[in-house]
Length: 250
Image (cartoon, rainbow, N blue to C red; front, top):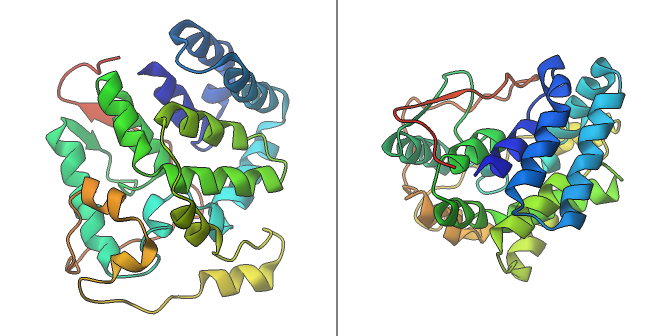
């Protein structure tokens, strides 16, 4: 599904290549037609914004939103496990899902990085791709709401993902994620507090506290820590790149 590839690209770190591809990205959305015109219009507005804005301003905005603000992190397991040690095993399990599908992520990015997750989904048959995106739909919805609060054009991408997923958002799950602290990126004291290490949780109930059993089951997450697996936070995201053992299917 090429639309997912477009949405993945828009959520990656802005580059000159992305700006140069603005017209092509719009053409893909229009040609594939899996999103409603109103939703496409919102995504096109972000594409236009990125094309018109100074690239360095776009990159600074991206870092402020997605790297400095924990509640807007594009790492899915940040909203599932936080700093729980279950996150390591979940990473291993998600990586295995990618590899079983013939997708090999580069070593420079964590498996739960949303653009990478979407690029993986874009290689699946349409029905399977929709099902995959539906698993973290409550996380996507929460991120979209926070971006709307900031009047960010990036909210349109999350509206598109939720619409594409056809998921019924679980109100309890959404509320649990929205209860996270959501400081502004220029509130340094609040940001420091939000990034403080959380209590490490152990045992079979550790992930249950997050209310995301569906996503956890989907990636066959283990309940024990994975020795030697680290989860660093990069200040700047490299571009997502994956290789497949066979040509992607759209």
